[in-house]
Amino acid sequence: MSLASLVLALTATKATIGLVVVFFVVFPALAHALIGMAVAQVLGEKEANDNYRQGLTED
Image 1 (cartoon, rainbow, N blue to C red):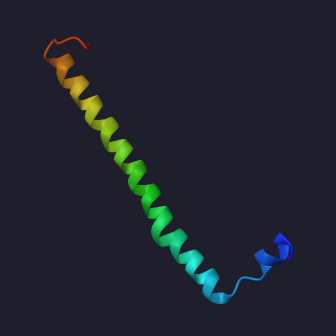
Image 2 (image 1 turned 30 degrees about the vertical axis):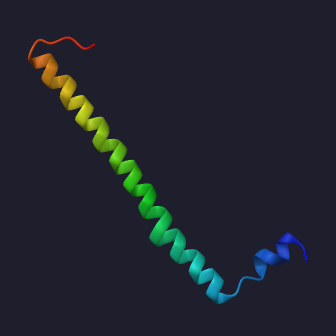
Image 3 (image 1 turned 90 degrees about the horizontal axis):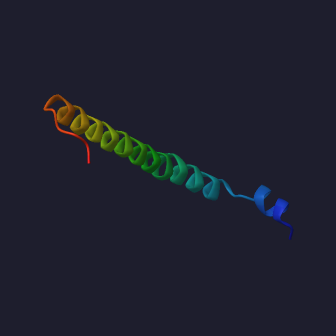
């Protein structure tokens, strides 16, 4: 059986499970990771701004 026929031979259950995994596991995990990186960037920037206001130099 070729790869093309395997892709087209998905049952409704397998397709549903695949969609559930993608939309309820993979996408939320990706979103959490990106939001976490953004928060870390914001906190680092805030610390740098606070140090600048106090007259401290960055190391």
